[in-house]
Image (cartoon, rainbow, N blue to C red; front, side):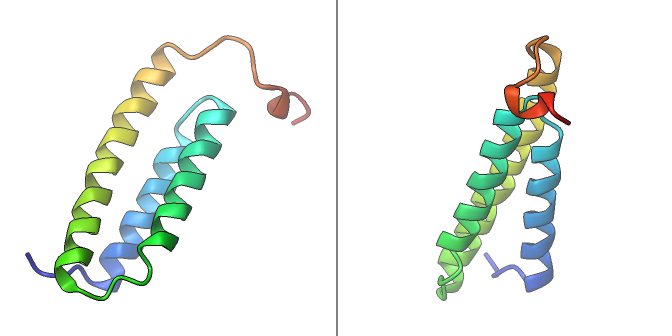
Length: 88
C-alpha cells in the first residue's frame, strides 16, 4: 500500500475532529478530540511507509466508527446537559 500524502493525513485529522463535534455530549466530544490529537502525536515520528499506511488505514477505520457512534449516541443522548455545558 502506498504511503498517504501530507494532504490526505491532514484531511483525515480534520475529519476526525469534525466527527468529534457531532457528539451531543460534552464528555464524548472532548474524549474523541483528545484521543485524535494524542494518536496523531504518537504517530508523528513514523518514517516507514508501511507503518504510515497502516496507521492511516487505522485512522480511516476510526473515522467510520466515530461517525457511526455519533449517530447512535445522538439517538440515545442523555436529556440533561453536562455541568461543563451549563454555563454556555
